[in-house]
Length: 205
Image (cartoon, rainbow, N blue to C red; front, side, top):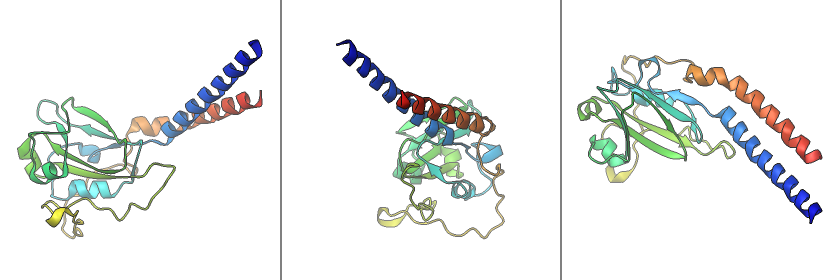
C-alpha cells in the first residue's frame, strides 16, 4: 500500500507539473493589444480607423484587448453582429465602464465591440476583431475582413473596401503590445524554460 501511494503521488506531481508547464508556455506567448494604439478607445478621426487597426494585427486565442477610455464619458459593449451594424446599445453581451478594460479572447471567430454611447458608435467608435484558431492549430485567417459599416445583404460579411483616402492612421506601436506585456515577455519565457526543466527532472526520477 505504501508503494502504491508513493507511485500515485509521483504520478500526480508529474501531471501537475505538466499542467503548470503548458500554462506558463501559453502565457509566455499571449499578447495584449491596446485598442486604437496611443489614442485608445475614442471617436476615431475616420470611418475606417478601427478596421485598419484590427487588420494590422493577428489575434489568437489567449490574447487580450485593452480598451483605455474616460470612464465617466465612455464605455465598451460587446455585442452581436446585428447590434454592431445598427449601433444598438439596448442588450449587450457584456459591458464595461472602468476606463481600462482588458478583454480576453477565449475562442476563435469574430468579436464585435461598440461604444456604450450610441452617438459615439454612430461616429464609428466600433470594432470587429477576427480571432484565429489557437496557437497549436494555426490557420490562415488573413483573408478574414471585418464587415463594412453598412449591414451586408443576406447575413454575409462584406469585406472592407480598400482604403485610398487620406484618413489619419491610428498611432500604434510596431507590435501594438502594451508596455506591460512587452516587458514581461522575456521573463515569461524564462519561466517557461524553468518549468520545462522542472517537468523533465520529475520525469527522470
